[in-house]
Image (cartoon, rainbow, N blue to C red; front, side, top):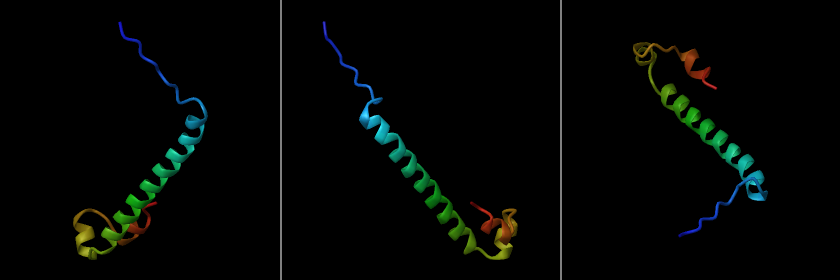
Amino acid sequence: MAAFEHTSTSGFAGRVGQPIFALVARFIDWNEKRCTRNALAMLSDRELDDIGLSRSDVYAIR
């Protein structure tokens, strides 16, 4: 019969790791939006109209 240990992350590593994970997730989200804004900003007004966006929509992405 085998015995397995289960380690909980509710200790120090869990308390420190969760805020760090949340910070990294926010950075990734911000960077993806930044890349999207930059890519859309490079399109012409006609190209934006083709996909149903206006120039102001591009800058409203937060």
